[in-house]
Image (cartoon, rainbow, N blue to C red):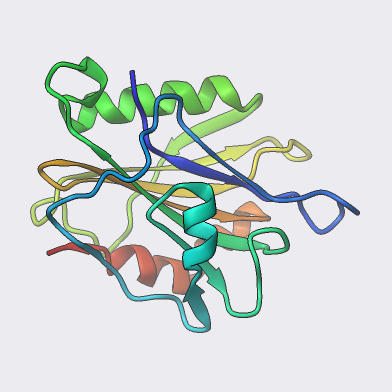
Length: 183
């Protein structure tokens, strides 16, 4: 079963020579495009890094200005996976999220998922599911907010990864997720 969530692992400021890494779900097929466009308002001082997105094989990488994927303390990754009625893991949003979450939970030891929903994202306007992923204190799991959106022809996964879990509560990140829309 194919999945598309891109997960950024933040090495952390205390890691002397560690590098941040982006991983995608098994079977992810880069280069797929939706007929719809995902639009959003970047957090103030953030930019899109097209080169990093190409290198990671995903749709978008958003970073604080002046940072790279290798040295950032926070990033947003966006990936798209097309629907496939023949693949039970790609047939509908709920199945896609279930398979993707199973892969995430299996690939990162100590990861936990809790329900979270952006305040301004209306499920009546765009079908979505969202979670907060985190680990126990001292674990190597990078805290994340993940939103999966059903574009009709596939699924966008939008992940914010930060260094410390309390950073997820930042109003700028809430505003970013609340701005997500499909055109």
